Length: 149
Image (cartoon, rainbow, N blue to C red; front, side):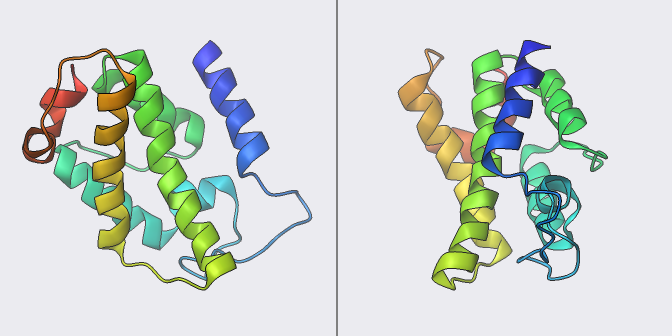
């Protein structure tokens, strides 16, 4: 429960918009931007998740909210620190891309985000966690082996 509380604080402080601040999603330009839309229900971001889940070989149904999304990872990744770090890094990639679109007029392909989502957690886990080393080719070829550490 403490992990969800920390995630809740992160969600509120970092990227939840104010109730009266209703803007369009910069990725799909269709839905009103909210944390749930931006990270789960946006059609464009859903394609990113689909590619990541295909790479991980996970069966994944997009959950109704971010709390359930975080809970889903508790069964797939054994290490609490790895699970939390990977989950936050993956969402940070989406958030940074969103900000680059808004503030720097950049554009992204789905493959750009998927590649960042593959590389950054691997780099982070090597430098931050005391787990068995997983080479990058192992990470790309069999990420489940590395995630189960």
